[in-house]
Amino acid sequence: MLKYKISTLLTLIIMIFTFSLVKADEPKLIGKVIYIDPGHGGRDPGATYKEIKESDINLEISNKIKKELEAEGAKVYLTRNGDYDLSKINTKNHKKNDLETRAKLINESDCDIYISIHLNSDKSPSWEGLQIFYTNKNEKNKKLAEITSNEFKKDMNIKRKIKQLKNMYLFDRITKPGILIEAGFISNSNDRYKLKQNDYQEQIAQTIKKSLINYYK
Image (cartoon, rainbow, N blue to C red; front, side, top):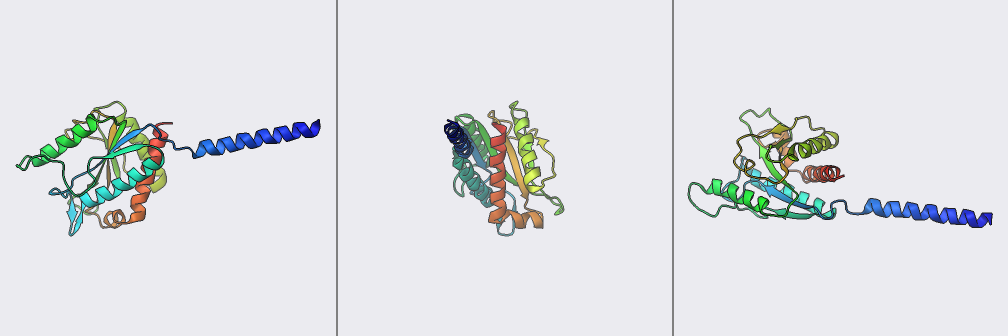
């Protein structure tokens, strides 16, 4: 009888342990829809340094984010998946139309969150570091910015604080929850070097994935 009880107890422990492992390995973003916006593209390369274009790095990082989020079960859209802008006109207002199109795509989608990827630039080459921005267009924006910023502080020792955006044409028009991530300064030699590295881009993508998982806990 004692042997039977011990055997039953061991079986139960093994079942609980196995169930816990399976549950831990389950994708954590199933049912979530994320829109990734790689800034600029095409005739609008964004900030540049010699042959390095912001638009190219934005897309590289965005593709890595997409891969990471999809691995966790999320459905992921990109506003662009190549080197082009989203303007539907060829006049001097093409940039404005590009931003309007991005906002419309995100607002009219079924996405739960958007993440816009850009690079920063400044006349002074001393400015450096990734930074996260948010607007007050949606009450969830600040919480998402704070959680994401905390993850970057832990994973990548990012020290720049979150900042609220005001009077930004694109982000003032997006009503879905989301944030803007300026992944670094293309005008800073250290940031510029890191932003071109595949490992660094992967690290950004993995940290964003962890941030969204924590946001939805």
